[in-house]
Length: 388
Ligand code: SF4
Image (cartoon, rainbow, N blue to C red; front, side, top):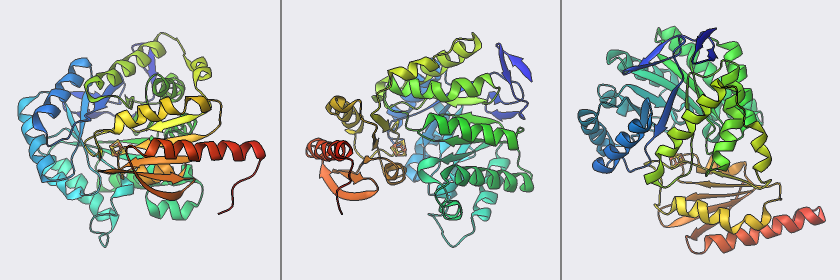
């Protein structure tokens, strides 16, 4: 193990991302992601600078269409920050993005959407080829809310096995292609699952640098507590080469993610642990995404805050409410929640234990949520589930 800032790191291979390097004994790099509309060039550039100034070694931007690509290219011209782009469905955009960014994150669970007849292996070869041509790193970003449907089908209810199998098969393919400039992330909204997934991955592939994070950790302070629960033990064990603290925050406060990441690293290096803070978490678990360019309505952060305020009376109930910004991880993440909301442009989609109840206006949704919550609480106190 190498020692850096008092933090022993596993001997992962070095991967360069612009002017920083992860793995290979380098200090853990804190990252963050813009929550602005990518095509809003000035707002996104300002947020890139805000995050980089706060200490983000890499700043990620979502890119879903040509307008986003043009904005990223212009941002590249106007900043020295190390840039990563987040690709979801349209993997082909990588050809235009690779020349202007330092890293591309792709989600194996979204590669099937675009050109579904084309095998995923060909798509990964394409990504590795354009990344290789332009000295760009890749991240295989596996997310619990959007695991590759092939792996989900194969592993049934074992979501952990599906996530790991997806990550491993992508590593194997990249290795076979001869592309080694990549890292992996395995994110879940449950800190215990993040710990397990990363430990199991690192045991199998100790050479691959890991990007750590609890996805949809929610609003601070709870989101920071949940992130610490996952990251502190992993970092102490030498697992993790870069990290992001994903927090639901108003756009202007996004740099708090970077500050939280830096504090976690400093505490772990100093031997300080905050795992006892878990006692501060209410039994009612509110999962919410950090928002990004894809958020379907600007009212999302306020909606998450309204949900937290309105449900405080149920703090001791062992239930999960998920509040998500868009359909990328919304439908998947809300499947596992007792009550799940994800934003559409004018309405909020609402699910109860995997069943879609409908779409409600931003004004109607809170009373509707509370009615369903009260019913779930009443059922658990009588010990029976309503029919239908
Ligand atoms: Fe962005 Fe949608 Fe993920 Fe929220 S759920 S962070 S809006 S992609």
